[in-house]
Image 1 (cartoon, rainbow, N blue to C red):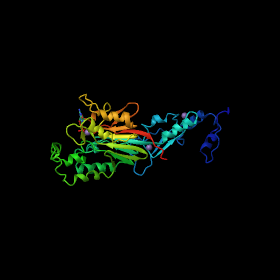
Image 2 (image 1 turned 90 degrees about the horizontal axis):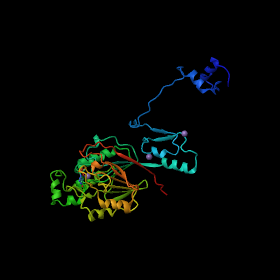
Image 3 (image 1 turned 135 degrees about the vertical axis):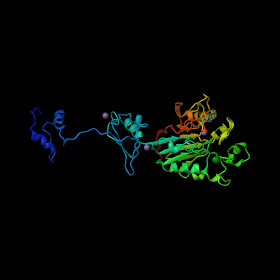
Image 4 (image 1 turned 45 degrees about the vertical axis):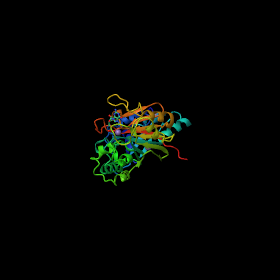
Length: 347
Ligand code: 5GP
Ligand code: MN
Ligand code: MN
Ligand code: MN
């Protein structure tokens, strides 16, 4: 209304038990000016919880967003983990079916967290983001000793992810059955001192110490509707475990990968993606790249091994993730790499 200044009693009505229409309700700026300095009104800015802060035990974490206007997908990588997501409206521009469908796909995603080449340095690495599926692409120990595997398994047990996928790398020497069987070979001899505490009958049981994950060795697992395949082999280098000659011997292993895998996990990189060494050599496997691009066509390919190749690349069809946590100097300072996929509809 255009009436004159309100009487003090009108304003005091705001604080009465009964809520009534304020006489100056159409002049909100004016009303706030009359209210704002009263101690009973209350106003101060609050710093929100930093999303990196660990959730207190027993708490439920709410993540709040609003006004995404068809652009929610851009948030996927940066949206903090939490238990309850709240969207306070304007998720489309006009509410058309295609817009609603797009927003609904954003809501229904699975978060993958990728790490590799942690060796036994997990206690020194950055905090691992929460997610649905954790992938470790090999080299979780220095040489695959039982106590190293037990420590890694305990580390996995403390992580919140519903599913954990692990493959071996060239450092999981005790997991390589051929290497461990041929104890007269020069390769085995080179590890004999380091492995002397592992009794002859014990090494076969070491992979079974990994009770807190799904260990994949040339095998596929279907998790939450995703087809995930893991393989430890890499081109031979310095006589370590799961080494094979470039060419046909490695291609024979890659030929075991079924077409249509969603997430491929290998210890070594393919040629050209995350494979550039400090000496500017490409260490990736040519036939692994060919297999990925021409036959398997996974959405994501996760690997490690060439620490200095850490990072994410794409050929516009597959996203390649070198998730090496350790740098070339074995400092566990690279961050885990996260990606999200729409959760498959299981019929
Ligand atoms: P790891 O011992 O963890 O398997 O490998 C550590 C480092 O050794 C890598 O970051 C890379 O610098 C080097 N390396 C491993 N494999 C190869 C390879 O096939 N070729 C070259 N040039 N370097 C490699
Ligand atoms: Mn809006
Ligand atoms: Mn999720
Ligand atoms: Mn390696």
